[in-house]
Image (cartoon, rainbow, N blue to C red):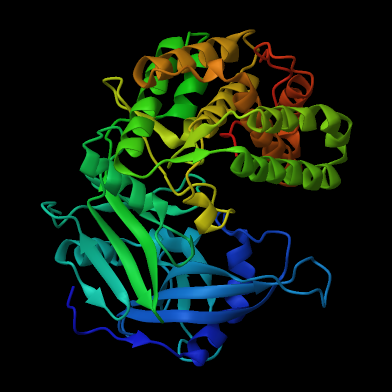
Length: 481
């Protein structure tokens, strides 16, 4: 790709105005759109870059667009800060049948009048252009395509879009690379690039090292837009692997133990290469206040949670009490959103951790804060519980066995078994289960019994390990939120 034939459109009201009515219909239907349930009131353009010139057989635009939405679905309601989305928009006279799933709409006016616009990640030529730009280290307007030192990218790799549900979008090139394009973007250092780079420098092989990445410099702000990493050929998603083993009635303990070791290897590598901090009474009090605040908001949003609120609050109070007595904990950089779906296992049995973006709904500064490693552990334990509830018929004790194996494997590497700090572990499991209750109530009501069963156990916990015997499983089989 030439570095000189493209130009950045810093102001293009005509382009955005022509796309506006189409984007209002199309954007809220996308899996990665964060503002579902609130109407889009308008768009503002952050940047538009022509990757292919308009007017030909194929035009191609890279857009960063803010979607303005009402706070509630009530007309005239106040707005909240607009999310910025990364879009790759192609335009053609007409779409061939193979691109029908990518259709955004037909433009009626403006610079693209009479053209058909679509999500260009479904199309071979645009995704080939992205890989070529990464291979050559292109500079296209405000876009920066960077390649890690010593990394080679072979040209001619055939791209294919990953069509499974994701909070971002991914393109696989041959069986060599996978490009993750972030859909909702914010300025600043993105942990999805920051942490894998740090782990690569530390020599940790439990995370695929970034080969290249896409960034942007706009109005003094830096953005990470995409990361290219090696594609782990033949690897199984941890969630799908667990479901397969459950369906066969097979034991998952060995895999869970190995996954615990892999998690601990990542945690110890992050602690070696990035700063750690000590959480004392003041810091833990702030942490507990946040947990209590999330509980109160969740109880207001989901009435089914309210009977358990006093018992759940006791989980947080117990942690605050320990801090008041002088207990301290070490905090460090962690994954931040760890569950079975964020793990890959090779045919040889090696585990990798992926997707270090953290919970996208949280502010970037919060996602980059040091936190107790047990938060990641709690997320994985909740994921075992979700998998157990997906079995039909249920397998009693499956999640308990996985919990024990995972924590034992973690202790083999770290020297610390998470179960030896039951107050901290209970607080983080409780916080995660509260988040799950709200998520399921809003998006997947059929799954609400899964976190509510955990809520019941955690609210009544007296310090003994919680049972994870599945209740009646819901029908859909998707990873935990």
